[in-house]
Length: 434
Ligand code: FES
Ligand SMILES: [Fe+2]
Image (cartoon, rainbow, N blue to C red):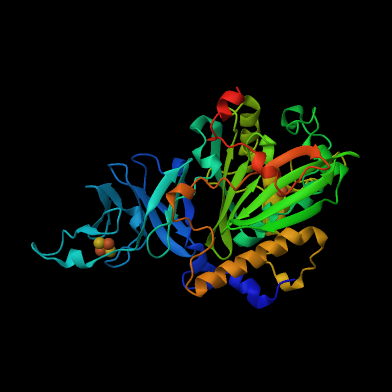
């Protein structure tokens, strides 16, 4: 259970709220690169409660501005891309990607009024198929080079999906290893979706989740967030070790369908307090995405509309199929994990009332994560630097973030096992794995 006032601190992210000021200290996804093709239309984007417009100028530079024109508020997403910037349709004011007003054609010649305008603007950076922005004060921090983002283009795939609930509910789902034994259980998995755990002679993660449905959860608070270990009995001598990370302020890494050879990274980015985008980058470490990876990725298509909404939603009862529940599908919510997760995290309502919950032993990570988030928010409120804000470019690679899904000896030191995991940019890695 969480006291109502603490819940408020965690779930509110508009400008001026303690949580919102904290979240603005980090680079955050604002769109997929595919949403903003060259010569594409400007894109209305709402983020952390702010109405914004994203555009690519003729020269390819990406700008993110306040959506309402500084003159008299017309919607700049209706504007024209020309003359090196974004031009408002109403009276022709032209904005550069940095928010400077470059032209005010209706003002008298020689007027310097335009120099007095500095429209709201945020810096952008494009990496791994995602456009990121920094909406905080001062100088933007060093961009953290999470492994999925620096994987070669043909090793990775980025997508996003709307969630009609507060970001924290869905983020908490990412660091909840116990639900794997229930929600996603299927005894009729197609063969292409079955993957062996690394180093395991064909054992599948699903088999492990079924075998030990009451995992031991251990947590470790770190500089970047929380490491979440889940330990399941594999046999008398071995354990199935899974390591997931919660990374400040809304990022998580989970093993996903790559089952050890790469993983999923997620950002749950508030649109406002009641809706958010889940951004995902999935990557294969040892090589380009394979046919079965694409099959897996494409299996999401029937679940999503072209504008990144889920077909299953509260209004249609998530298209739950009670017949399939008698035939090996635990949830009756189709065959893909993503809409199943979305249904569970949206179903408590847009903002979960956390003073009515009853946390159990397997919620250890959820508790540790809330504590870490609250501490980080207080730190920023007190005028300090937010944790995991990187200022030294030499620390951009964040090698302390590793993801594990492996069967290891029972005497293995599971706390430090992550140090053995190689990264895509580790020297000698590609030669060793091809
Ligand atoms: S409202 Fe945009 S130029 Fe007048
Ligand atoms: Fe899940």
